[in-house]
Amino acid sequence: MERVLSGIKPTGQLTLGNYIGALKNFPKFQDQGETFLFIADLHALTLPIDPEVLRSNSRDLAAFYLAAGLDPKKCTIFRQSAVSAHAELNAILQNFLYMGELSRMTQFKEKSQKLNENAIGLGLFAYPVLMASDILLYDANVVPVGDDQTQHVEITRDLVNRFNNRFGPVLTMPKAVVTKVGARIMSLSEPTKKMSKSDPKGDIYLKDDLKVIRKKIMSAVTDSEARVAYDPENKPGVSNLLQIYAALKDISIPEAEKLFEGSNYGTFKGAVADVVCDVLGNLQQKYQAFIASGEVERVLEEGAKKAREVANNTLHRVQHAVGLL
Ligand code: TYM
Image (cartoon, rainbow, N blue to C red; front, side):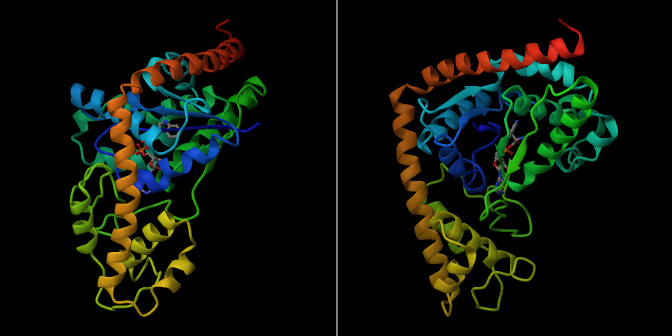
């Protein structure tokens, strides 16, 4: 049976990019295989974050997992920090990824560039080791992620080869699975840049007021050609909106293009705003209901219990392989 694992970092507010590239796709896996979804709170510490913000973001993220349709009876939802095996496996695996390859990771280069040399924590540099530990603890074969995380899954695969060549078939080889439409949603204000949790103008946040969402979409940067067509290089803004529309309607990009043949940008943007507001309005209602239900903490505690059993098994196997047991 397939083992599926993914996680989201509770830094900043969740974006439409997180929803389309990751969250929206998670529920279908819970019917196909054993699925583990977690809150990457230890990863959230790799850049400075206020403790209260981290706490409330973690709770919010769990409520969004539930609102998106994850069912705790069918999958395991937990906080990374509640399963100590993540940190223990990290301590072992850090010896099998090397400084050179870690310093070439795109995410590290982008995030560290914005910081003073003396403010780059070791955790930011070693980020992929912890992420590999997350994946490998659950013997995951399938790791659903957006485009920007595939490099981290690739380095995990390198680690598995390196480790298994030395110690035998101990670790399971994972594979990144990326959604066909929407693996990289771009900023609405700068459509050549990825939508990320830290750009209030170009991002749509899952908790944004629907009126604000509509306004952001109606003022999204496009071009002067007045032709709705998918051409990410020459028409990045329009292509991004087409991608958002197609992903949320579960249709292909050519199908979306066809629907808007001959439409002007005002009509096109209005239709994109309608679908985004429809989907996010629904999600927000469910999110509010889960927050009000007080169930979130219980789901996380029960999830952590189940996750610990699986993770500790793998940890023992690795400890034995390297000679700690
Ligand atoms: P994070 O929190 O940055 O993002 C969570 C998920 O959202 C996807 N994503 C996007 N997809 C499409 N368009 C975008 N603009 C966009 N922005 C983000 C990400 O690709 C990701 O799938 N390192 C991970 C968390 C993590 C993890 C793991 C994931 C820790 N351990 C183990 C999988 C397996 C992260 O920071 O994602």
